[in-house]
Amino acid sequence: MKSFNFLASVLALAAMVASLPIEMDDHRLCACQQNHKSQLLEDSTIGACAAMGGEMESFEREIVEGGNIDFAGRYCKPHNTKRLSGKKFNIACRNHNALDSTCPWG
Image 1 (cartoon, rainbow, N blue to C red):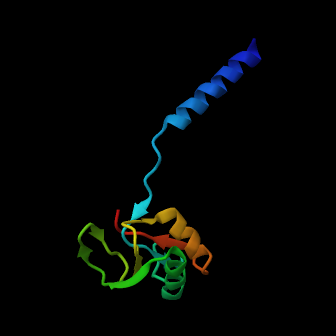
Image 2 (cartoon, rainbow, N blue to C red):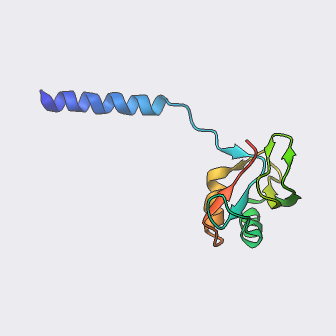
């Protein structure tokens, strides 16, 4: 009887997790960083951007439409799509010798 209750609980939990909305993880700009909340790494950003099929654009530290730019420098923006995946961009940064990424626009 106990194993049946355990199995029923596991199945109920799996059903709840499956019904959760998928997290939206898309951004208009992303750049690679040396560490969390640190300056941008331009070479890593260029490499990650190329791997993601994006294009580079420079931004100063300012408020721009859609969000704040906390770190001046070159950011990657999508080329033929409206958004970049923040998670995929972070992986691309790590593949290009950066430890973190920043994506200031939601």
